[in-house]
Image (tube, rainbow, N blue to C red; front, side):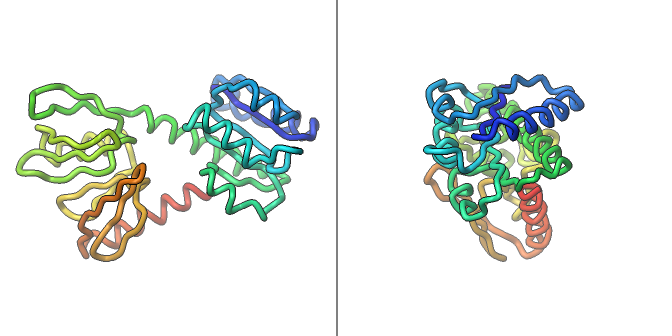
Length: 240
């Protein structure tokens, strides 16, 4: 893994690097950590970092702008903002920062945040193999699946790349997803959705969005309480 630590105070960079090295070593994670005090070096090196730990105020380029550059090089980078400046919190959410951590760092929270990032990275690599109606085997990332729908003994799969009918039954595809991901939940007996794409829901409808496209699926009264619990659990994971 390629890790960036960028802060205009060298002692902060060194201290955080030591903590990160300790955490990665304890968890047997191979990581190369790049220490920077000059954000312009990050802009010019165009390196695709897997994780970036940034101070929001880093001189003439603030951490928000720096995060945008980093995410251009690798949209899947996990960005951690480490600062006391809570006035930038909304901007941090706008660039989809993974965590917003206050100084002085709480090591336990830092470690759990890294563990969660690693889990999410692993989920992105999880794939299942389905059979199309043309009898072609298709390998698809579970993270790219927005939802699946029961479709006359087969399964309609709606994904970021488009949609198709899989020959496998709805229950078979559901079991495949459950075996490798905890991101999916029933909204209705015929729908199994990826909660990371949920933009709105009430007791009758769930709205999902992905890259400017909107989708609506049914919510049944019997599934609502469990669905709401799942959303609450995911929100807590994102916070911590």
